[in-house]
Image 1 (cartoon, helix red, strand yellow):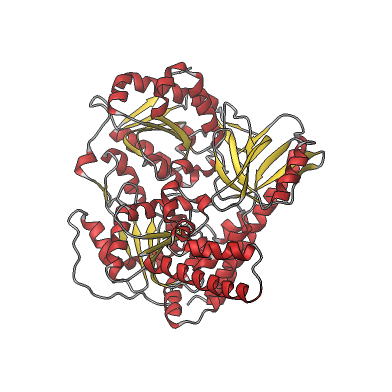
Image 2: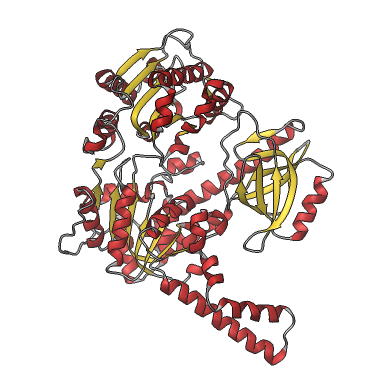
Length: 625
């Protein structure tokens, strides 16, 4: 029996450790910048110097400021995203000195970033300082998310509502889940496992999990499950850990003519979702014009009895508009942290759907769980986990998601989607065996598809006898392997020549180059840009890290594993979920470039090499390729 108090107390300690690590890392980053008073700083979370550009007002009436910067040839992958906090700084001998203004990123483009400012006086201070110093912009720490997680954990511990206590006991493993019996459902356009998943979703009383391996139609299944639930309930809450994931599932629901109300910062939403945002719907309400006129009259100095009447009417209209927006929505969607927004106070839902639950920190999940009677989770705990920066928090279990725990606690609540529609079966089979107990099957229409009938779906290009331990750690602690990077580009060119550039254009064949390390991704991009051969094909080729490729797919995937040393050290390649993501991005062809001697000391890579020798090509790289 899990002690509720100890359980939530431990989670709060882990959140504190993670916040402390973020704050300390932020301070270390600022202090370290003092050593670079000349030149530029181009890190994933920093740009220096920046030039002040135009100002404007955004749709929310906030003052925004353009920040312009040079783009290097080996441009890094940015951590800057719309809605994230940022600070403006300048450099001194003792490090970077930040200005006391919290900005929020509005957009990030090629060599330009726009940030919203708290006030005109903040802009004036930044402008005055910019006349005396070179300025930079640094990604800040999102304290709000940590506060929401801490408060939600405390509330989840002390809440005594009978229905919630039952749900909490099931989620902690102190009670068994229950199900109601319903007539069998049938969706002819879905496969058997997808139908089984929807049946379990509508029958569960506390928790159900849709486990969707790569290419198995997880989103399709979840959308149908939500629609079927809405046949029985007037409204549901749909959440995900990131704004991008919330937007994606919301867009799929909108395409099925479901009325979605999107809660959150509009700066963090996709353009497609803005029309569904609370702010846009609010300003489009028939009563908003009257409300705007009342607010204008109050701003212009209405007094006495008139002001009293106007304020009463203002309050009544605000309540009415808010009620109308929520009453009309069939789905309310937001991030897990966004479920704690002021707008969501006292909102309660029979069912909460959490998409990409395997990438969600458990403390963030509780913020949304507090608002529901039952929970449906969707995701794949065999792909990338949530990001945890504190080593101590990691050791304490912060990276172990609630979905992961529930899969182990309540296997009868889990439905594994078993038919995948993305990969050639030879590409799929190793992942199926290693991560999914061999239960995945390739749909007939994809099982044997290839780029060329003369090719095999799998190739390992072994660098063991060629590269002579050439990995190198960069200044940013990433790892690169220049010889392997050149070999990857050479291999890509040879493969394109074998297929023919004309076929690539006519059949729109696309390529992805994936590597675990940011430094290697930057190097690969630079090498691609340097070769004139690839210029006409650049729209067909994407280079990125494993994290950047989650949720994507390409016809051909080339993986650069980078690690090449005598002692068999493979770093975070030991997190096999990364390799699962990387390998399963490929539809028709998977090429892995790596040192088999270094990697085969780990049983996973040893087994993978044997699988490729059996079903594909294992090739020793030619010297000086």
